[in-house]
Image (cartoon, rainbow, N blue to C red; front, top):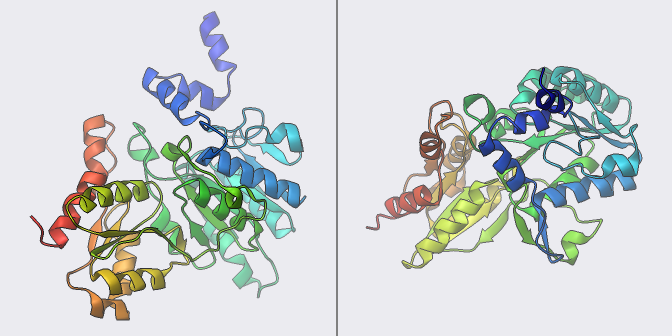
Length: 368
């Protein structure tokens, strides 16, 4: 084996994966960028702060996952935590999602509060029995005797150039399960507030992040910087107020919706953008309240069209008073109904962006 290959195989797994192509290396550099200034904060830094503050606040909180300790996390979310809290509370695991998720659930049954990181939620399919059958159901099956205060977190949905097996959005998968709470942050405010709330919650919580958002900076303020800053589950945020059409979305597509709304505003169309934040529980009241103003609803997600988050919202609106206020059918904007292509041009066509949202909004409103 050559000296260069020996050097490569001494590196952690994430580093070896990142070295496979120049495109991936450039992506890793982009995702691992830091905030530009003290008055801004990246999503990565917000997540890091949330874990740091909660581990400091509660000694029963600990972190485990692949490369979370010595390598500072595959996406550097856990940077500095091993040095601060030591190897008993920041634990590197083998590459066995079923194994370490089971360890985490068992530890939660015994009163600790694990934060179980998956390098991607696509890998969590190996652990879905632990998450659903053990984590989500045991409180009910034990007659409320055995609690499971655990957080499952990591990147979810499409990234860039990682193809069919590493690009799925699992919001609707986990959102269907009684016993789980499911949240999906968009910006740094969401990331810190929702993760802190998840760690403090006595129930299992799934936190679906987005890889491409980790390095994005957002404005910070004293509220976000506070160690007591939490965002309650089941409460959506009005990211932009409007009066002509409601766009309900979550995670990275919130940015696309805001971009489309800005473009629509230049043509005299006022779009209200709802950042759902919470998938389960879902803030249906916020959506209905918005529909009463706009009389039109569009849902946006990167997941597949059948049985998705948008489908559930559409069904619940049909069964509620919100239906009486609609002047047009609900429009679902989703990812394409195909496994994610690897080719860059096809990948772009498989995901909704600002252009798709803009065109669909005009179609719903019957505006040329």
